[in-house]
Amino acid sequence: MSIEKLDVLVIGAGPAGTVAASIINKAGFKVKIIEKQKFPRFVIGESLLPRCMEALTEAGFVDALKEKGFQEKSGAKFVKNGKICDYFFADQFTAGWNWTWQVPRAEFDKTLADTVEKMGVPVCYETTVTAITFNGSDSVTTVEDLNGNKTKIEARFIIDGSGYGRVIPRLFNLDKPSNLAPRKALFTHTVDLNRSMDEEPNRITIIVHKPGVWVWVIPFSNGITSVGFVGNPDFFSEYEDDNEKVLRQLIATQPYLAERLHGVDFVFDPRILQSWSTTTDQFYGEGFVLTGNVTEFLDPIFSSGVTLATVSSQKAANLVIRKLKGEDVDWEQEYTKHLLQGVNTFRSYVMAWYEGTLDTIFFAEKQNHEVKKMICSVLAGYVWDMENPFVKNHDSALQKLARTIELEILAGEEL
Image (cartoon, rainbow, N blue to C red; front, side):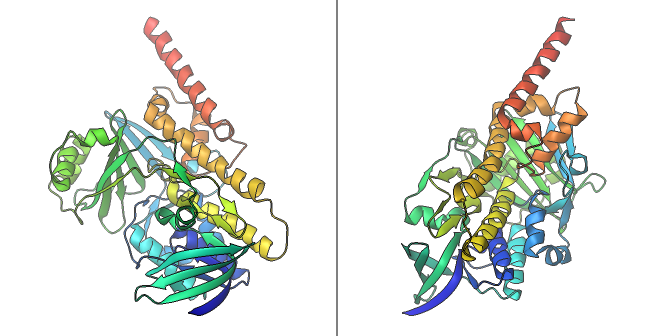
């Protein structure tokens, strides 16, 4: 069996893996990516957040992405019973990027992987990690390609950006359940013939269908729109039919969708994703670090997946570079604590969404502009800005605001 020696082995060629590999490669270290699937491949997470642009910039990917002509995204629109709450990233509290993209992920991820290969980083597709042994921070990883050929890779460090594959957590029994309730998504891509160009497609639209059930509408620049319903699995059990008929029935129940997507073709048969939330006991160990969805995938509601993937990999890559240079790294403080600040902020907003707290805030008659700017920064992915009270006190600030709004409504009714 052949043996290859690397400085860093990266598992996964998605946004997490490619961002990490590019940054480490630019620092002059030998790095290689192992990817189980063949690209391009479909994955959800199509509406990005501005914060991820900083990671994509450091990795050197922005120019290649601009050439693709992806749909620029400048905000998010929330809709409930005809009421609209718009968040524009240009109005956010935190200084930073005020736009990003909405992307077909198959093309987006392939662009990142192709670009990192052009930078000199090998990407081995359809190759599976079958075993890893650690000797201190050094490791030996066994990989197997599609033809059954096995190779051993000796590395000084491993970055696991394998996403749903969760390679290291599964190999070493690190997985544990998330505290988020299980949910289900039914989704497809549609040929969007009735798109209104005066208000589309420069932002994601999120429609409140009923308590605990919502719809995403994500237009792409190629005339295709991603649409999906998300809710408790029990909600979907009310519909007994094949996935396409169920999704068309659901679309017909929403006036906005019924008009826009009536009779349109589906690009692929509707798919189901469910019970996606999982986490892990540890984000790092001697010789490895976990990034992106390997740490925890929360929920699609605030499009946090790619942001957490790219930002965690950006952080991890720079810490690995320091480690390889012989510097001391406090992984608990510099990585886990930092990453959890962002994860837990998003978690508070996800839970507040399903509990109805954000419903109260988003659709209040009176909006405090300064507060809205702070919440907008969270929706833009700036969940590490501790100058923002709605980040620093992410749970209590939302609850207090919602309670204040409820008291104001009650006082108005009494008058």
